[in-house]
Structures are given as structure tokens and as C-alpha cells.
Length: 331
Image (tube, rainbow, N blue to C red; front, top):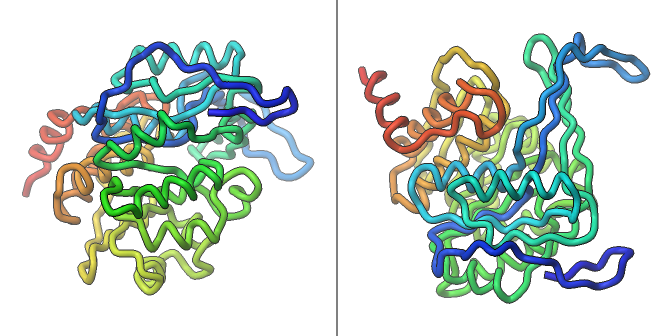
């Protein structure tokens, strides 16, 4: 990968970890530090709040999904970029201690992407992302070769448009990997840093699995979220899911449509629940060949289990934990 920032072109450095020669999945996106502020209230414009407690945990959609899939069994590599700073040191150390290959993680000039998350007393949140390491993410020949050798590739809409565009075309090749895409944020949040609407249009044509939450769906499709499935299918999307938080998810596969309810659990932290759902859906649909209803129920269970611990990845389950959870809830 190359860095084209103000410091001039420079080759990004790679960790020493060896990637699987042909990983089952390559996940593309950010690996971050999430700074949580538990505030008295979410401030209005020109308003304020008091943080009763502050904590730091590791996150990032790319890293969350990669870790979630790897925890379910498949060999998984993360394609991400960190800055040459203390935050980058800490993020990399956390990744290297986990189940995901970091051989495609690069480091270079810039500030490691991090999030400031204000969390209100009722669990409502405001998220501000800073740092330019993910914006500078690019592809090199090693990344291209690993993606082509993989069974599937996952891309979040927070990946730079040039990266998403090239990966979509790799997936469209006759022997290209299956493509999973997560429309992770509304269009206005993605502008000038993430995947652009024209590229998302192309994603819909190529993707084997398209996942979006209701706010992002409404922003991109310009329709109510409960009409998003029909709108995506009308644009040529073959298989996907629209998530509605505690109201579950709507899954579709060709002409079939399935509504999956969310599981009721005593949630400790809902951060990362959507990423846990996406990870399990990718693993079941694209790597496991499961039908929509079975895959959706498995994904809903994974999301519920992740809510039982702090942080975006604190409760990510393995396959046995999901199976046991579902067995306890069999009618």
C-alpha cells in the first residue's frame, strides 16, 4: 500500500504476522479505539453534558466483523490501516492477540482512526469518528492477491471509495470471491471519506450479500426502511438484510423474504450488535451455505450474545455458544 498524504509517498509497513495462504474471508475496514463517555444527557446544539464515567475499548466495523467471523471458525484476514502512533500500537497489539490474521494490516503516517462515543442514560448514543488512517487505506499487490484467493470478501461502506470500487470489480471477475457489503452509515456521513452512492449502485449489482441498517437504508434508498427490501430488490440486489435493532431484521434471498425477530436478553452494552449480526450472517450465508431463515436466526443469536458484555467485541461468541443459545430457545 502507498501513502499519499502531506508527507509524500511512502510505503506503509506491514506487521510480521503471516496471512493464511488462502483465507476463507478477507474483511476490509477500520480497526479503532472506541472512547466511551457515559453522559448525563446527549447534548443539544450549543448544549452540554457531564461524563460520569469514561472507558476505552477496541472496535471498528472491519475489525469487529473479522473477529466475529474468525470466532465462528473460518480463517480470516483483516485489511486495514493504522497510523504510526500510540493508538496504532495498542490496536495492533489487540488484533495480534486475537483470532484474525494481521498480515494485511498496514501502518504509515497519520492518526489512527478512533471514535468518541457519547452514551446517554437510556443507552442512546452519539458517535464522532476522528483520525485519517482509514481514509488513507489502499490496495497493494499482496492485498489484491489475497482477496482473489479468498472464498469471500467483506467490505464496509466506511472503506474509501477507491478501495471499495476495486474490490467490487475483483469480486465481479469470473473466479472472484463472494462479496458481502455493509452499508454501515448514512450517505451524508460517508461523503468524502467512504463509499460513494455510485459505487454502492455497482455493489448492488455484484454483491452476494448486502446488509444495511434502517437509517443507512433510508438515506441511500430515499424511502422508509420498511420499504427497503423491495427497493433493493428492484435495483437488482439478489440477497440481503435490513436490520431494525431490537425489532429484528428482514432478510431476502431471491423471491423469498423472512422476518427474523431479535432475541430478548439482559443487555450490558449494545455497541457492536449490528457488526456481530453481520459477521454471523456472512459466515452462515456465504461460507456456510445456510438458507436465509436459519442464517438470520443464527445471526440474531450472535448479536444477542455480544450484548451481554461491554464493548463492540466483548461478547462475540463461538459457534458452540450460538448453538447452545438457540437450543435453549427451541420451541
